[in-house]
Amino acid sequence: MSIRIANAVPAAGASAVARPFGKRRRNRHGRGLRGELLPAHLPGNRTRSERFEDLVLDSVERLQYLWGERIDAVEFLVADIPPGLEELVASRSPAPLGNVVRARPGAPAVVTIYRKPVEAEARIKAELPEVVHDVVVEQTAELLGMSPEAVDPTYGRTRP
Image (cartoon, rainbow, N blue to C red):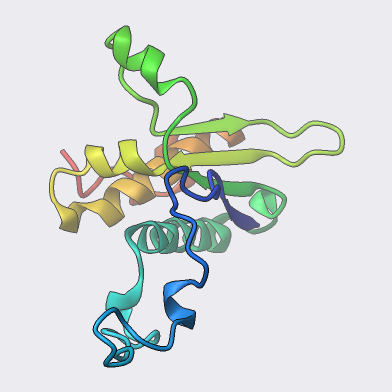
């Protein structure tokens, strides 16, 4: 079981600065750099994508506890958006929340969860962990050829 991050490409509009901000000795007013706003050990320091990955990891760990070795070889991938999203929007098709690629010789099975569509599916921020768990369960159930309720009995109980 592993989780990878897709689309980890640097931003196209990144400016070319001689020294990164963290390596500078003084700010533009000459007073020196201030300390971090939030220390790294506090939860507020995590980005939205890192918090989303944590939610996926929590769901995968629950499924690992329930199914053990049946999903050991499955690789879970987090991507920002599904490929071909522009065509889906143009045809007014709903964006997929996840994707499953079955195992092939020399390649493990891959379950991909798309962050932006899943976040859009949650009506409020507090609902996001349940939505993420339901999507992970749905994709794993498709991979295993089972119903989502059989994969995890708590599937869909928190959402209407």
